[in-house]
Image 1 (spheres, rainbow, N blue to C red):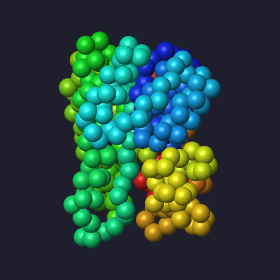
Image 2: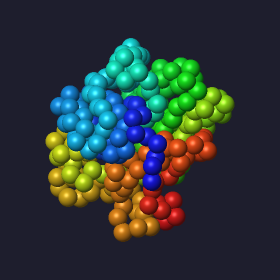
Image 3: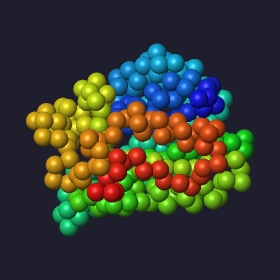
Image 4: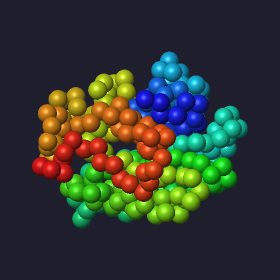
Length: 272
C-alpha cells in the first residue's frame, strides 16, 4: 500500500526512545526524510543511523529541549534549511514526574508534566504551522494517552495534560482544515520497548539504569503493577512499532479525510 510518504519531511520529537523511536523508524521504512529530535546525543545518533538503514530518504539528528521556545525555533529553522519544508509534525515527546497521589504532589511536578506534555506540543505546532499554512498542506499527529480518557491513579496532572492535548487536536483541526492540514492524535495505553537496553535513551522512563521504571523492569515485576489495567488481549502493552504504524496511517494520503480524531491504540483496555 503506497502511503504517499516517500520523500516527505517528518519531524518526530522525543524520537530517541520507545514510542518516538518506533515512529521515526516507521516513517523511515516509508522512504520519508526523518528529523530525529531529542536530548540524548548518543541515542539520537543511533536512531538516525538506523533510520537510514531502514530506508529513509534522508535523516537528521537534532538535539533540542522542546519545552524551550528558542530551541524549538532552531529545530524548525534547521529542518527547513536542510530539507526545504516540513510536511509532517509528530508531537510525541512526553512523560510524567514521579507517580504520586495528587494530594502529595508539588507545583514543581505539575509544571514539569505540563511543560513536557502540553507546552512542548503547543511550541512545536506554533513554529511549524506557518510553513504548513503557506503551502496549504500538512499533517500533525499528537501523541495523547488513554490516561486522558480513562484516568490512572497517581497520574492526575499527566492525565490532565494529555486531555488538553486531545482538546487542542480537535480545535486545531477545525482551525486549519480549510488550509489542507489535518490534525489528529493517537491515544496509546502502556507501550514498552521490546529491548529496553537498546531501545531507550538516558531520559526514558524505561531505561534500565536511569528510568523511573528501571528497577521494576530489572526485577521482572513489570511496570504496571499497582496502577495498570489489563487489556482484552494476551499482552498488556503495545509495541512502539504499532504506534508508529498508526502515525504513518494518519499522516498518509489514505487518511486525508480524517481530522480532529483521537485514535486509541490500547488493546481493548477500555472494555475491561
